[in-house]
Image (tube, rainbow, N blue to C red; front, top):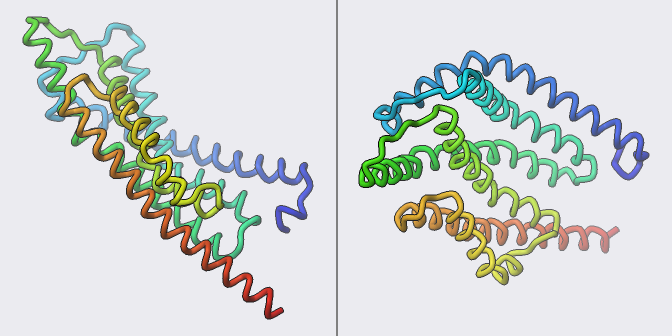
Length: 251
């Protein structure tokens, strides 16, 4: 049954089904993630960026809070392919066979880009940020007492946004396929997009030029890659429309 043949109640029922499946898989992943959270937290505390820092818990609940946050984050990453597939399954009846195949291929790419964005922020940017912060404290002769909750909250605030921002090429490709954006439009708003990306980079990096450039340049490159991908997608959309016109004229 296509989406056009479904009533509003059938749409709601289908959406509820997809949400229930996603929630069930998520809670299963949370149980599995409880076994992964502890070694990951220990590893991050022994990494080069943190091994010279003494972690402190200022509240009894801080270790449990961090443990649960890691468990849920790991579960979300594990479940993200299932969630994206359920989203695809919900909208796929309204797509052509070719569009179904193309949009289905976005799922692994999206997950890889999300993990890649987090990895880039942690392995490339985060060490410079920690070094910058500690160097300022040393110059001011300040003895840093670092809370484990504050340390990992700062780590999340720096890495997770990059996982989201690295989705830009996939989002642009998807919107181009839907006809919502075009490469010409992305080129037209390039200077405004650059400004927004520079502001975002300023918010998530410390106030030194090197860290800011290390964030800004990859974000600008991501936007240019998105334009390139949009051009390819737009070309395929035009070819599909032309082929459809030819088929309609022959029939």
